[in-house]
Image 1 (tube, rainbow, N blue to C red):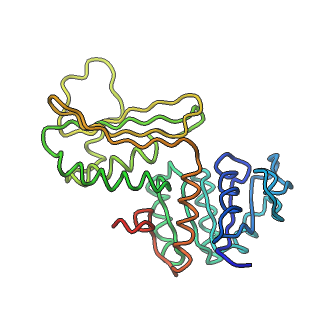
Image 2 (cartoon, rainbow, N blue to C red):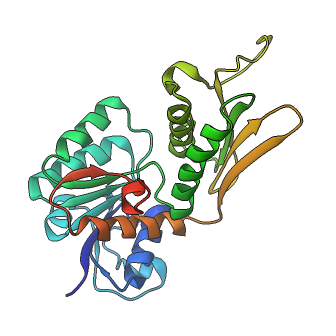
Length: 268
């Protein structure tokens, strides 16, 4: 069996199924395990059948066995589960690709600590296109640093549980860093009532939730007489899955360390 051995957690979910499909179609990766929570409909099913493909992997609830069998675990689940899986990856010296959003500062510290022993790619957005936009935003923010108000608008499906999205927050961090600001101090996450004139030093966020929107993000640089907009729109979850596999292949040569997609794509 050649290629990076991949385990997918959350196999029955929308992102999990996309990861399974992408791995089965990838020429440099091999699906060795698929995991879901006990009692979910996918348990006991052939992982390939979930996506209309053929394979010999059966979906299991035994996440530790899956991690022990894999070179890399790909996780797009929820923060609590992801951090539990992180501890098991550290125990078994298994690399990990983390696409989970909503992880708070303590969880990020746990990821950084685990990365001393195993290689981890942790990114708010695994899409190659979105990460290209992050690089463009850094350049644009330095050029448009004076005379432009900056607003970030994001839209996702009705089932998304965190807001703003991890991608929107990462965009805000990129912009703030380029401008020499601290996002925690300059971000505005909501406006209501008589808010007064806009503070030019702030970065505004607006959130939309509805339907089946996969993920739309736009950064607006609003000047006098002109507006520059830089956008990324995802039509499916496939770009995230393909990026995650690219990250898994990147980690195959690493002993340890904490990386993100900018590292994977050589955009540092």
